[in-house]
Length: 308
Image: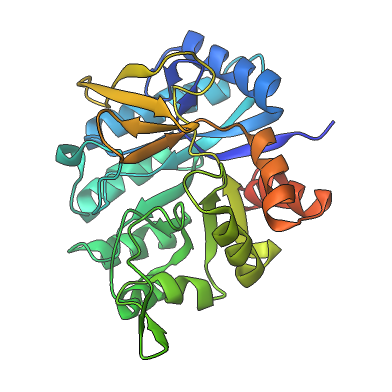
């Protein structure tokens, strides 16, 4: 039986990864294996105070060292914040400017278990923090950002190797003037730079299926990771749901069109897809072979995370 890997994932079955108790992770683990044919995952944490993130890292380290979870294995951590610029579905007040002091605290707590750190390259202080994380052996992605192409090139030189949920960052519009296509943001730079691996939410809602196909063809199988960006609403009923943010403030969300939206708006946030659905979508959207779809949903994300 094919099994998949959740590379970028915030929760499911009514639980968020920020619930730091074993029972929640056991239920997450069982749902992923049974409902999504997923045998391993990275617990992704979005923007939060550094103290909270350190607590999350300590919890995950202890959980990984203890009795294995009953379903999918907790294989590491993905830090999606707090050093990002565009909030997306995050709590904007929890975003933070990059500092080496905070980066060192996170690195010390996450050494050996953090598989990716997201940083917005345009923020003041971002490049030294990217260089620090990269020098300490952490993979760094650019995400929740909007910067000129040259700033992204500087970030790649500093150590950025991937893009967090490409086409859901605010990379800027692709424009046309007198038959010439251009963008002031990093969109074309990301497509053209063969040093950059992209993650894409392949639920058919967050990104137009035709764009998924185009990006996969442009980047090639070695630089394309399919992600769910799954959230706690995955696998539970309801049209209006309430979940806490990382500091416990309740937020409301609407379920419609097969995805999660910030309540009362058209602003997309988490996906409701599972990895087995993504696998089928890639075959349908891109005309991928089963082997190539499995590579995007399992082999490459494991390789990128250093997980067998």
